Image 1 (cartoon, rainbow, N blue to C red):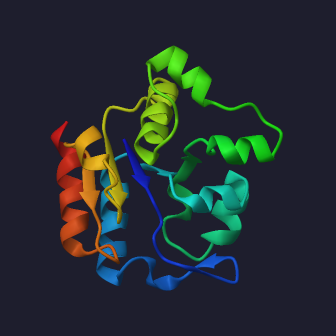
Image 2: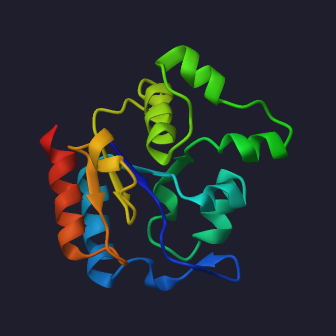
Image 3: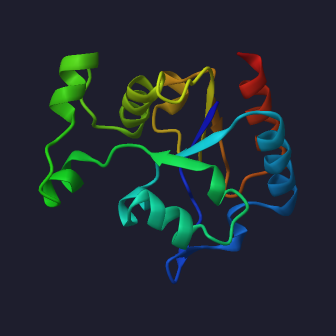
Length: 163
């Protein structure tokens, strides 16, 4: 099972602020990860700030969920071009019928490319900005308001157990 997360706390000196989650949410997050095989895939713009290893071991090193981070959604085409890499939109369009122009399409692409690799049977998307996610993934989206609350954790847990 996978949780796709857009980080919505600001950074401070390259590390995630401690306010990312409430203490109750962190306790619940540990409970979920002990019961279910959960991996976190980052879809925020923070994924552009470094390699997966740098994100886990520098940016989120002081969080309880760093070890659960397994991947990040693909970099946006403009960023890939800037780094001298090929754009993924033409590939996504040819394979799946959509370009990578939104967070939803990037998540959709990642899920399709990684479903068998990670044996994904279910997922939940946690994001503070809907931007079409609730339409594209109506049964898998939790809209977070500022910080992760106990109610958000419970809704995510219900989603992961449902399928």
